[in-house]
Image (cartoon, rainbow, N blue to C red; front, side, top):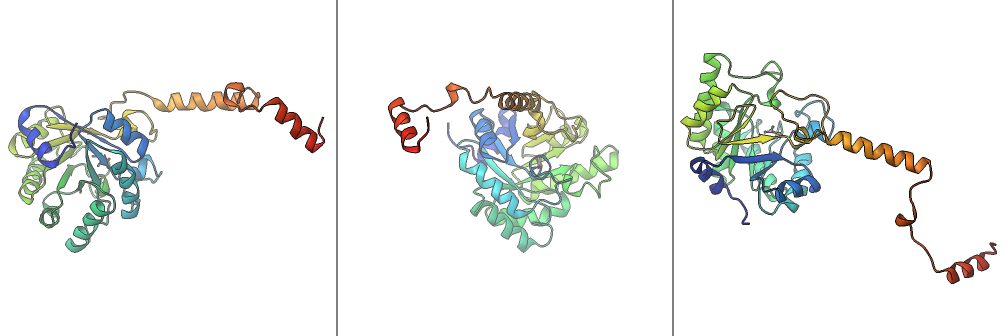
Length: 282
Ligand code: KIV
């Protein structure tokens, strides 16, 4: 299978086949996701919450994002790899945004970047795109600015708020984004936006009419227990399986059942006797 490119993703707008996207932050899960034929792997700044144990995504640094993007891009062969720009890496100045986006590609080896924000971020998007770096937008519930939005809440519920979202999507399209994540917005708004722009929309809590869907992998496999948004479908509860394995290991070690012969190394009896004799042991 050939490596998926940005033009491939843009072309999917018209072929009717929904785009699949999942987050990954390390080698083992990125490998499974890529082997599973997922189109896009996002090294999301959700890293901060599901892997690094921060209370939110605001604390995540550029260096942390690059460290994990490197691990993912080292293993992914087919999917498009997107490096998420953390809070503070692109909202200070356009110069800093372009420079940090360059780092994401040069050091992290991502294929492109994602950043949060609508109209307000259009000049940043334009500058990064002009620097030759493809950008995925992200509007609706933007976790980095959740405090300004009044918390982790569904966005765009009033007619005015929905119109503002529509304008944000249009501004990002004009600025040159190759796709836009729509997070936690009513499905009818996501449908209108999807039908009104020429680039693919990727939904997370935005209904089935988007051009694609994304989930945080730790939510999908049940490996994050702090909270589960309504839009998350947990396909397996892997944490129960891991907890059971840890419990069995603990029991077997304390009862001296592990390691058994199958998991131990033996030694020729002649050599053993020689060693015992040399040490004066019976
Ligand atoms: O950081 C992240 O995982 C994201 C997805 C939820 C889209 O931005």
